[in-house]
Length: 159
Image 1 (tube, rainbow, N blue to C red):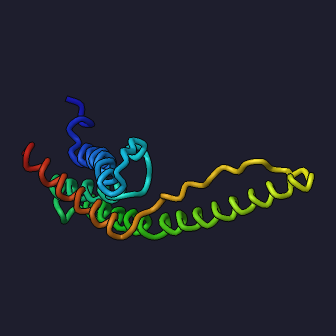
Image 2 (image 1 turned 180 degrees about the vertical axis):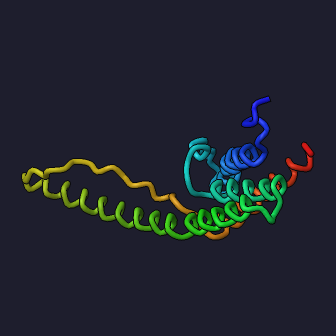
Image 3 (image 1 turned 90 degrees about the vertical axis):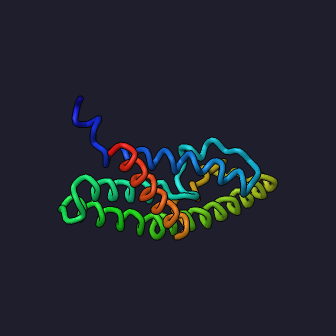
């Protein structure tokens, strides 16, 4: 068998992404009473698939190479950076996108009012920015635990 197919850390991280993305659909349904299949391929939301992936990877590397290995140390630092970014920078970028979208809506309203004055506006329609980019700290935490638990269960099932 090719080594790629037996790379437990890789497949554990990939499975964590799929699992976290799939779980978003029923969680959203229970909170909004709407099925939204687009969540399978979107960023943001509960739980964080970024956090699930990096914690599953780190847990799997710990099992395979040991927690004293350089690979584990690299994986831990990588996980901390990704999780911090998901709850920090990306979350703030989403907040900024929401504000910018409001400004664009207001600008569109002004343009529509100018039309009644027979003034030709230069721009008709602006594309909305994606607002759901980052995560609340709880979404990062739950995603992190999902990755650790999933990787641990799979490791002990196949070991």
